[in-house]
Image 1 (cartoon, rainbow, N blue to C red):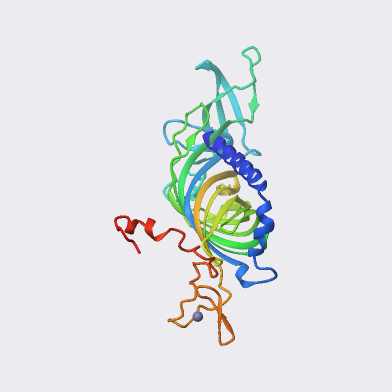
Image 2: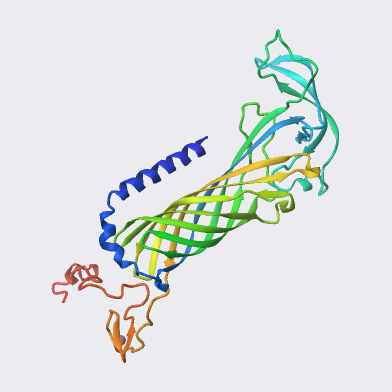
Length: 372
Ligand SMILES: [Zn+2]
């Protein structure tokens, strides 16, 4: 549950931050002119970011049987052709339990990643009758159900993983909006999935291949809500598709669209070069068809990211080729405009801007009587 709370807190913080920063939009009027008007290559931003991601996987398994002890499979029943018969009601840990016989089931150890490899590399498909204990939810001892019932256990599994994403995107930056597209590659190391409810009869689920990769392709839209000379804050969203690596049974997977949102806080180091930090959340899910199409299991993946990035634009003019020329601003030789500074520095620094500390206060001069 802490994941959900973290997620909600995170959303609230972003919201509060956006509203608070929105109050300062007067800065926009004065600084938005630093953005080039009309189409300019300089407004095309190439972004790279990386960082850390914390993933939370969740799975709901409804109407499944289990046989604790021997093989630790989960038995999935086909809702249309299986039937469960309840017999032998007893009390166990103050709850009413019944022994249920489930027919026509599919026993699986892997229902997350690659079900086909469950047993010795062979699909584990069998039409089997199993007996397990089911908890009676809404019955009283004086009104016991008899005959055929079709419900089984409902299980929730959850687990966390750590990941390192690498994102590459390109976006056109209008004064207020950004539009673009990107790709991403991510390495993930997943831990065990644990049964979430109190029944606790099943062992943890261990990924057959716990280190895997994810690829993404997405469209990008952003809204810039704060801008000053040095800082640009944008709230943005990526919507796209994702694919898991080969350790997943990709032929049996159906991916749902991916949503990734957050804020990007950029610091302009020059007109062409920026660094950024970006807290983000992501939601994606996929449906996995179990062997023989006996049923489909939905897997939800929620992730939080802390990213740092760099952003580069192609400078509008070439750098001055004359070595002896020490001009730092845009300037002219032979009728052509040249940049004086490299791309990572401001081209037209105001007087003293690049060296705001007095010489006598510099650390290296701290012991000199006459630092000049
Ligand atoms: Zn020059």
